[in-house]
Amino acid sequence: MAGFVIRKKQLSSFQIIIFGFAGLIVFGTLLLMLPFATRSGESASFIDAAFTSTSAVCVTGLIVHDTATFWSPFGQFIIMTLIQIGGLGVITVAAAIAKIAGRRITLMQRSTMQEAISAPKVGGIVRFTSFIVKAAVIIEFLGAALMSPVFIRDFGVLKGIWYSVFHSVSAFCNAGFDLMGAKAPFSSLTIYNTEPLINITIMMLIVIGGLGFLTWDDIAKNRFHLRQYRMQSKVILCTTAILILLPALYFFFSEFSSQPMGSRIFSSMFQAITPRTAGFNTVDLHLVSDASIGVMMALMLIGGSPGSTAGGMKTTTFAVLFMTAAAVFRRKEHTNCFGRRLSDNTLRNAAAIFLLYIVLFLTGAMLISGLEGLPLTPCLFETASAVGTVGLSMGITTKLSVISRLILMALMFFGRAGGLTLIFATVSGTKKNVSLLPEERITVG
Image (cartoon, rainbow, N blue to C red; front, side, top):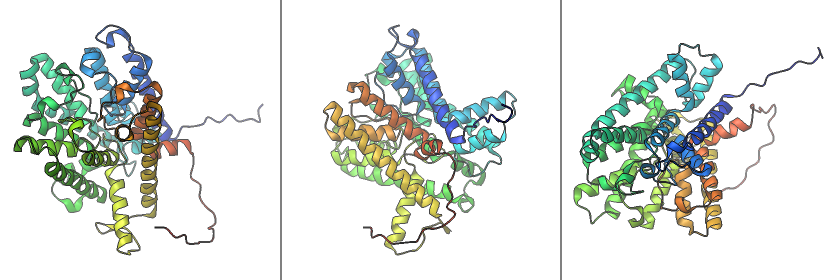
């Protein structure tokens, strides 16, 4: 017996992140199954509670019950808390609590924090995590303060303040949960289509939350000195601006022509911003054209930026693939950006992520369409919304069977945790080739 050595297997950073999200979903499910979490006083079914908890933790916004009319104030508070933790990241919140409690953060924990927020290095990670939490609290407070006059006017003081806080957290974390069912079930923000204060505040919260923590850091440190920004921040800001401007122009000229000019501008801007993982909507999606639905699905799959509260394949993945294609078309040997050459590893990761999202998006939609006997288009919209952690829906979520809901839950979890994180959590270690095989070309295209 003395010859045997018991070795304790240590979880990798990727596995800790995955288990953290999964554990939070289970905990949220149990809380939402409590009788006083619903307005009726009856316990929600396991699948309904699990679906809602997954959607909240993965900051998606797909729902099977209207949040305002089905869940009690306690249930709504649990949902908002799950959104907050899921948006900032389980590891980020845990690290912040540990720091407040005065606990020492080990090197392994710092490495996990680095992976969780996509930071370039371990050094200064604790300070950076504190910056993230403080910035999030300040931004959400300002968002709630800006929206409170409208909500207090419509719902009274106490309820108006609660609605302001809930929607500020939901928008900043790109979750898309709303409490507008008090006016009309499953209506999202359609009743505020012409309200400038709500539209502008929600759009700003969505964009800020989706930029990414590293981009915040660059903006806070370097202000208007754009040359000093990291290349990643430059790519994110440029790509985000393009993905807002071009779809907004498309929606302005192709949709909403019957609306007054002010409402038309707000609707166009909002529908350009919200598909990139936010999930609110100010127009009835059944009234927009199939072409616009296609544009929204593409935006949902792209999503927000790395290390942000948003999901999707990320703006940087889209930008890298676009720049690589441009380099191929121009017969350039390397992909360059802002005076820097992108590494081959970056290009491989971008291609792998894109393929994963497309396969899951299409496979999930075809499975749901076959199981439910539904047309493919709404199923594609639903799976794009789930894997992009968006929350927009064409109204079929509430009608789906348990198996189809499980498919959407798996897609939401994949979209929030990240494709490479899940794969790296499953495949341990890095395999290095000690020799190179002979090279041979294969024709593509």
